[in-house]
Each structure stands twice: as structure tokens, then as C-alpha cells.
Image (tube, rainbow, N blue to C red):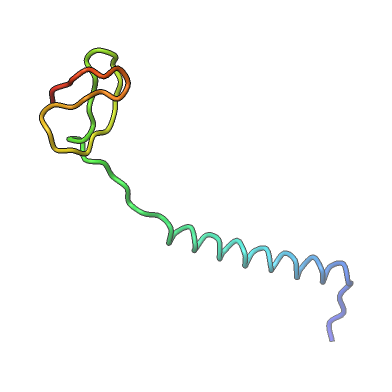
Length: 73
């Protein structure tokens, strides 16, 4: 029979549990990763106030949310 001190057994058990929890956390993070992308045609740049904004409406002219000026693509 192998004899082990209580402190070492507790440290070994705690370390093993932490390693298992870390492995589960890593696997959960991998599953949560989602590919997010933005089509460049929805990114607008205001010529007056130089503000970049997103407008998902497929229009030729857009209204700047900051200064209210009209912008053309």
C-alpha cells in the first residue's frame, strides 16, 4: 500500500479538479466561438463630421446619426 500525507493528497485532489475544470472551460469556449463578419457595403463614412457608422439598409443615400447630413455611397 502506498502511504501519502493528507496535505499531499488534498493538493493532488485539488490540482486534478482544477485541471479538469480548466479543460471543461476551454472546451466550452471553443464551442462558443462564432464567426462574425460585417459586409463592407454596410459601413458608411460621413463626409462632414468624419464619423464611421453602420447602416444595414440597402440604399444609395444614408443619413449620418451624429450630424444628420446626407451621405452618398
